[in-house]
Amino acid sequence: MLTTYHLGPEIGPQSPTPLLIVHGLFGSARNWGVVAKRLSADRPVLTVDMRNHGESFRDGAHGYEDMAADLARVIAANGGVADVVGHSMGGKAAMLLALSQPEMVGRLVVADIAPVAYAHTQLHLVQAMQELDVSGVTRRSDADAALAETVPNAGTRAFLLQSLDLKAQPPEWRLNLDVLAAEMPKVLGWPGAMGTYTGATLFLSGADSDYVQPEHRGEIKRLFPNARFAKIPGAGHWLHAEKPREFEAAVAAFLSA
Image 1: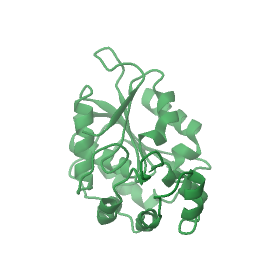
Image 2: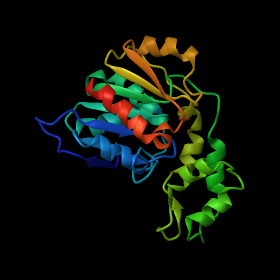
Image 3: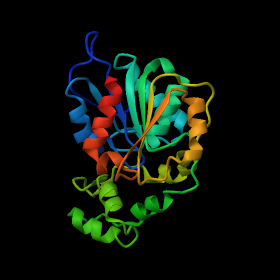
Image 4: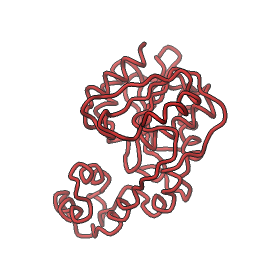
């Protein structure tokens, strides 16, 4: 099962519905620490490392059917029903879970992603990490300087370097880069899904992001007929990191409505 972290009250018959937070590509549960802690003030919160990420297991398959099944196992082990927040890759996995096993999902928040295939690729970031010689790196600043040759955006580098384990001997990425490279077409794609999820759903996007376009709304409403849409001003694709307070407030308001 996925490596799972629990914050807030214990899960039990009298506790509020747990919240499961699902990170995106190259992320981990630790990326959500601040947001998860704040949201756990009045409900149990679970964060996970997805397969081939963080401390979770490595596997040769990285499709959305596999990831949705992983999430279902986590929910089954923690009361059987959860509200779910998923970002990017995690949002697609959460959507497929809601469509295939709607009885397990109370409310759904999809952060800056749509149920469509995307034409862009993140393979260049995988290659940049693979090509970086981390064997003698002792300081994150040195890794950042070296990575800048292939990844010019400082924010992207900072995000990627959160998955570099400098305490390991030798240092290593907490990502299964070979599998992520091989399975990138699946990560960028969308398997399609039968049926609909009629539960309350919020598609929460960054106002400066281009991941959720007006032309996506028809397919979103077909699959999620009770979907609502909101944008966070001044935020891009990593809206939870760029505007954590605003993200937290939007999610909390939706979950308590």
